[in-house]
Amino acid sequence: MTKLKIKSGDTVRVIAGDNKGQEGTVQKVLKDKNKAIVEGVNLVSKHQKPSATNPQGGIVKQEAPIHISNLSLLTSKGETTRVGYRVEGDKKVRFSKKSNEVI
Image 1 (cartoon, rainbow, N blue to C red):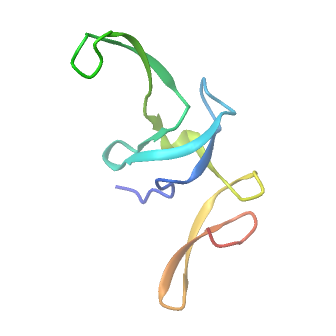
Image 2: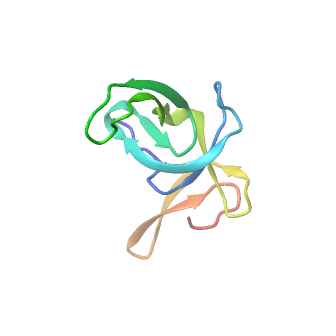
């Protein structure tokens, strides 16, 4: 299993696929599938039966997982970058390969 460089709470941009160019924050990372759920990206329609929590039922829009390889991290300036790791003192930190700043 490879080390995933995108974590929950990161702001990302989709760089490939049907949702190319959309941005959002990562809500959850599915390590075993190498996928992430990004807020407001890759919305799918799901048909739901009426229940106690949703008495009306009907068609609900929800986020579907998107592969990590289709995501790129956004820096504070709003540009995409790759992520690297380095040791500073006794801590391992993530850094932006484009601007060399710690994330």
